[in-house]
Image 1 (tube, rainbow, N blue to C red):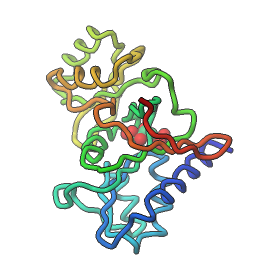
Image 2 (cartoon, rainbow, N blue to C red):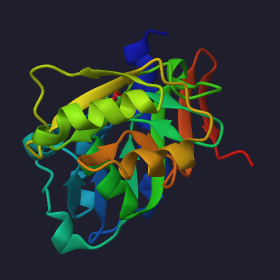
Image 3 (cartoon, rainbow, N blue to C red):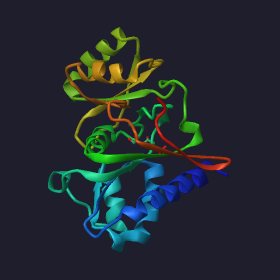
Image 4 (spheres, helix red, strand yellow):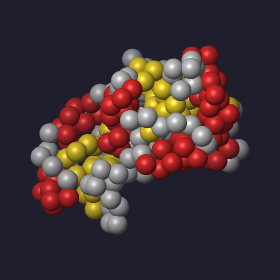
Length: 225
Ligand code: 5RP
């Protein structure tokens, strides 16, 4: 199977996971990226079975609306029963690196408001240790150089993602050569740097379920102890 076919297979598995729990008043949390897009495209078939969605990016909001799915502001919905999103890396505890698409802050906000986080990913995203994928950090623009210097002190090689402005009007620094032994502690440590809006470690609020697509089909995994 190609990587695109694997992404579509996990999107289909996520539809199967949530379909029994959809009601006319259900609002779903929806992520960002190519795997989330596969899910949005499949969700279109069910548009009459639930109320709508909260999106983690302007791009996903547009894709949902183009399919006739109503998009709500998170402030008007309260918590959502499910958040469905991809990942750049995911480990056995279902800690993730996210933000390759620069949507990490809104993704983390919607994930925080979700009762169940379903991560959908092809098998290339599964790792023993997080960090081979450069960790994104969203920063307030005027703090970018200061944050970069602090990241160097922590052992990272920070690289400004040129030309990218997040949906929140901020900038992204990607941390290269930064393998992470304790994702929960590092997530908190990075967030404590003044000027950091969010970092792409999703460990304090990890996924509850991972639907992982590989050559033998879709595996359903839950966090290991
Ligand atoms: C966007 C994200 C995405 O979930 C992550 O980059 C995975 O994307 P894809 O499904 O395209 O591989 O965090 O900010």
